[in-house]
Amino acid sequence: MTRPRKNRFPLLLFCYFLVVVHPVAASSAESQDEDVRAALEAFSRVYQVAEANYADPLDPDAAILDGAIRGLLSRLDPFSAFFDPEQYRQLQDQQQGRARGFGSILYVQSGKLLVLQTLEGSPSWRAGLGPGDEIVKINDKRVDLLPLPDLVQLLRQARTSRVRLGVVRPGKILPEEFILDPAEINPPSVDKAFLLSPGVAYLHLRGFDRRTPQEVAQSLRDLGDSSMKGLILDLRGNRGGGLDSGVRVAGLFLPGGKTVVTMRGRSIPEKEFSTPVPNPYYTFPLVVMTNGETASAAEIVAGALQDQDRAVVVGESSFGKAAVQSVMPLSEGMGIALTTAAYFTPSGRSIQRPLKSSGGELLDFSMVNGGAMANAGAVANGGADDLSFRSLGGRPLPGGGGIIPDLLAQGWQLTLWTRFLERNTVFVNFAQFYLTIRGSVKEEFEVTDAVMEQFNDYLRNVGILVPADAWKSDQQFLRMRIKNELFNLVFGLEKGDEVEVRNDPQVLKAQEVLPRVEEILRPPS
Image (cartoon, rainbow, N blue to C red):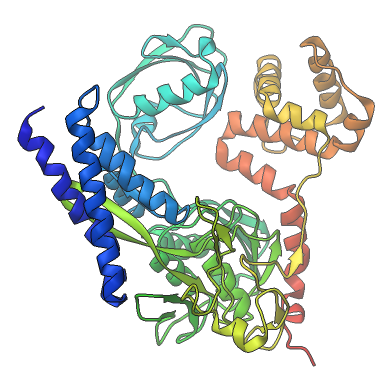
């Protein structure tokens, strides 16, 4: 390692820290400036002593970038982070909805790798891979001999360069060889879209990127938006994405000039994000579904539609993640994400739940003055933990972080035995076994009592005991999962997903609520 390389990093360190502390220094007392300079000088002296005397040569990247800088940011909160050039590039790709790979959606379990769907135009699609194809080798490594962590790691590595696959097609015994080159793919944001019944549409959004608003609008047009009686917008499992995308999706269902979200921070001006004027929008009844994995931009959309009395929220409380990360580029392709503000719903509710920093301090983003992220609605209405927030029409709304549903709905309540089956490859293995005997199934297929008897026999033959109470109480779920996996393998993931959604207890609750949306959203007398 050359001497100029060693001297460069202490100088860069000061640049990085100045970027981090500049907003604080600009508004702090002179004594705080002195404290910062003294701390930086102390760090520089420690680094120089360690560099000169440590038993092994210091790696500046490990010591400063991975050590000091990541350590500094991790002490602030769970969201602030440092990105090296590769991580920063991946972050930019994610924001654009880009990824490199082969375009296959896979069923991954220890020792088993099944193709469920290939994205049109992707390398897998062009090669002719499709539902039910089993990948048995990756670059001459046998899948059945790999533990799950090793298999996942191999799949990640394989996405970056040419890969040679051994694939057994349905009904075949010997594998065929496929050679694929990775390419940039654009997985859709709307990953499930169909009619639950005439005029009643169901859309699931997996995330928010720059294409999401157009995808939602196109999906609604494809499903007959002009004659639509209602929509179930499923945001369960949606971890968020771009704020602008979320605002534009909310704008598909809100009139012009309506507030979607407000951003408040200590060092940045308060900013309100609203729908454009004029703004053509859909007026049909709307139910939004959330759960504990609904976060960030997805919570912003759900909160705006709930606060503006545009939608009934059904499901479970959302994650409560709405701290604003400002991504700041640094030199040499690196960057940092800093928590600079927090998002608030139109009624003033803080979406972000209070959380602890790595140092154990409680970070309450709804605090006034102390946290400098004032929840004006909570102050005006008496606190963030009660029902004194109000929707546009005057309905009481709970605060305290996260989006609380208007109507709670539980998912499947399964026995431990059935959860054990879910954690293993039992259902997909039986589906393959069934297709080996039957050849195929038609779209009209239903899981009859005779099929359930075959499943029961199959479980016993592979050494799985079948407790009578679990078999009886989880019967509906077992039938759904068998049909789900059969349709995955025969018709593709889209049809398999439809089977799962149509039997989902939370979706069934949302369907039940849809005709009552206007009644539920009516202002209190």
